[in-house]
Structures are given as structure tokens and as C-alpha cells.
Length: 258
Image (cartoon, helix red, strand yellow):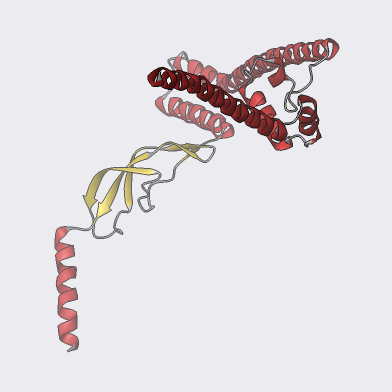
């Protein structure tokens, strides 16, 4: 009997212990709910608190700049920047196009006028040259007439008369050339000048100065102070014996003075 009573007591104590544990858990849950409910606030009050805070302007500006930089070149945001010029009206574009066409037309006209002026100038220059040449040839015609008369003259003419006639024709021809600007170069009796003379021969001569022109082999001419043809001349040079004597004299003179 004692054993049955003890078992019953043991069985009676187990439900009571479980009830106590449940009560403790309920107390802990209720305490935790009460603590959390005391710290947190209702949703309406939290939203009011967030709206009362001032917005972050620097962050919004940086985000806007990043959006503008990330935008592609052809996008409307890139085209609406301050650096892009406003679109040109169609009327102004049409006016600029017409002005361009007018300027191009003026350019073509000026180029054509310049080409015509160049051709006209060359033609006038050629005509002036031909006219000047015809004038010179006209002055030579009397010389040609004199040569023909002398060549086909009567056979009874003597040599002296024929020679005098040729001298007159030569003088007439020289006068025509001189009037045109042709002048002979003086050579005989002058000192050799390489600008106007061309030495083709040398002759030893102690009576004349060194490089003095002895003979003129071909006459030279200048046309309007410009060399047309140099004179071919023969110049005098001292002999070798004379130069050796002069050198010996120059060597003995200082010794005699001592």
C-alpha cells in the first residue's frame, strides 16, 4: 500500500512541474513582449520622424551629376546642356546658304577675269615685241638696198669706188645698230678686263705694260649696258729674260744698300 501511494504521489507531482514550466515560459514571453512593446513606437510616429529630417542635398547633387555624366552623347539630357548652341532657324540657314553660293559665284568670276587678263597681257606683250622687231627690220631695209645696189652695180666701177660704197653701207648699218642700243667694246690699247675681254693669245713684249691688249681678233659688243659678246684679244706679257733680270735686280739692291 505504501508503494502505490508513493507512485501516485510521484505521478501527481509531474503534471504540476510541467504546469510550472509552462507558467515560467509564459511569464518570460510576456516580459519580452512588454519590453519590446515599450521600446518600439507605432508606424505612424516613425514616418513622421523621418519626414522631419532635412534631405541630404550633397548626395542628391552627386547622384544628379553621375546621371548626367553616364548619359550617352545622343541622349536628350546631353543635348540640353548649356554648352550646346540653340538650333539655327531655317530662314537663317537659307540666307547663309545663299550667301555662300554668291561668294562662290564671285570667286569663279574673278578667276575667269584673271585668266582673261593674263591671256590678254601675254598677247599684248607678244604684239609689242613684234611691233618693235618690225620697226628694227624697217630700219635695216636701207642697208639691204645698199648691199643689193653694190652687188648688182655696173661692171665699169673701179675697186676704189666699190670699196667706198661698202664703207658707206657699213657705216649705215652700224648707225642702225647703235640706235637700237648696240655698242662696240673698246679693246686695243686698254688693259685686259675679264668682264669684257677673252684672251686667246699671248705675246712677249717688254715695251708694253703687262696684260695690255695688242690686237683684237674679234670685236665684242654690249646691248644696253649688258654684255652681248666679249672681245677675243691678244695680250702682251713680259719676256722670261726680262723677268729674271728684274728678280736679280731686286735681290742685289738690298745687298748694295748694306
